[in-house]
Length: 264
Image 1: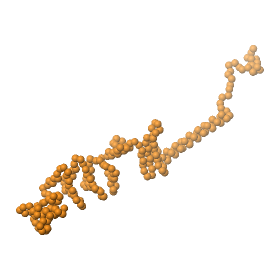
Image 2 (image 1 turned 90 degrees about the vertical axis):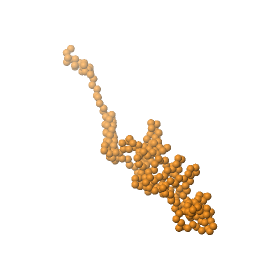
Image 3 (image 1 turned 60 degrees about the vertical axis):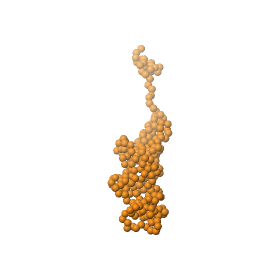
Image 4 (image 1 turned 120 degrees about the horizontal axis):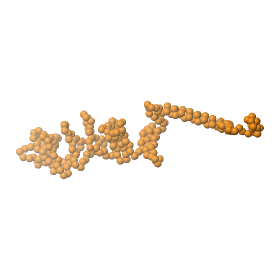
């Protein structure tokens, strides 16, 4: 059979040519194509909105490579720190009236982060700076005791310890030493000044000891006082410990002038 007769016979019988594969339509058509375009447009719109919001947030908070993040709030700004279990381990609250920090231990370090300047916990507060300065007009108020090995005034300034309405007490189990290396030491009081030693002695050691304004003794017989024109006196002591002056003569006159002891 010739080739032309075979082609005509195959077309009449609807037979496929040998060596030819069937052809099928490929692609999305109809509603599937429209849904795909819709999702692509929705994704593009979401990306544009997200990018715009990110740029707006960065601009509002002044966050850039040259600047820091700025947080603003009408009430307060609170930052929380949590562990892996979700438990609160630290909190910092910046409010209009106060800054509050809640943590187990608060530390303030120097700019380089090496030297510890301030630390606080439940047991103690430590100031590790070389100098602690209080500039308020009323100074510093401590509700309980303060422990320090040294209280020192600034150079060329006086140091003053004062209790305006109550007493001032200095106690030490091994002794209290008050000295003035280059100046006088003055102790004054409106009422009595008492020096007491329960087991030891009171020692006055100086080149010159002056007892001013000591009272003059009173004669026992006449009741008159000693003359104030006397140039030399002797110091007498009453049984109560009161000291008085008596005119110095060839013999002691303390007994004759001892009536002043009756007034003590």
